Length: 246
Ligand code: SF4
Image (tube, rainbow, N blue to C red; front, side, top):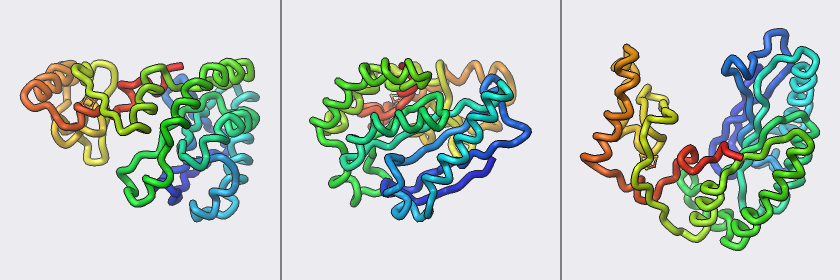
C-alpha cells in the first residue's frame, strides 16, 4: 500500500494510493483505506500536481477491490469527497463512478476556510447548493445502496453543512466529550475533537492504564466546565454531527 500526498485546491490533502498486495489489512481488524480529496474527474490532476493521479487511483482501487472480492478479506474502501461550489454538481456522478471502482463507502466534507482563506470565498458552497444537496441526498443514498455503496452523512451533518454555507453558528452544549470517540493529534494529545486538542488534550503518556483511559471523559467534561472554548460555540466536529452515519 503506497501513500501519496498532493496539494489540492482546498489545501494539503493526503491521498492514499492503494495497490493490491498479498497481505491486505482486513476491515474487521481495524484496517482501512481511503481517498481524501476533491475527486470529480481528472480535471483536478493539474491543481493537485499529480499528473494522471485520478487514473492511477482508479487502477489501484479497482485492483484492490478485486483482490478483496477474491480473497474475501481486505480494508474497508471508503472515499471522502470534498464539496466545493465548482464541483458539487458532479457529486452523484462521482459516487456512481467510485462504486464502479469498487468503493464500499463514500463520505464528504464541504470546503472549509482554515487552510486557504484566500481560496475559500470563491469556492465555498452557496446556501442554495447546500440546500439542494441535503434535499437530494436521501434519494441518492437509496440508489447507491442498491449498488452496494453506502453513502454517509446523517441529518445533523447535513444541517451543519447548510448552516456553514450561511455562516450560521451551531453551538453544542454537551458533546459528551470522549464518550464515543477520541481524537489524537500529531503531537500525541488525546482530545474530544481536533478543535480542542491544545486546550483539553491529555498527553498519551499519561494514559498508561485502563483507569486513566476510562477517566478521560470525566477529565474532558471538567475541562469544558472550567473553560468553554469558542470552538464549542460553533462546533465543527464531524463526529458530533454524524458524518459517518447513514
Ligand atoms: S468543539 Fe465541539 S466536539 Fe469539540 S469540545 Fe467543543 S463541542 Fe465538543
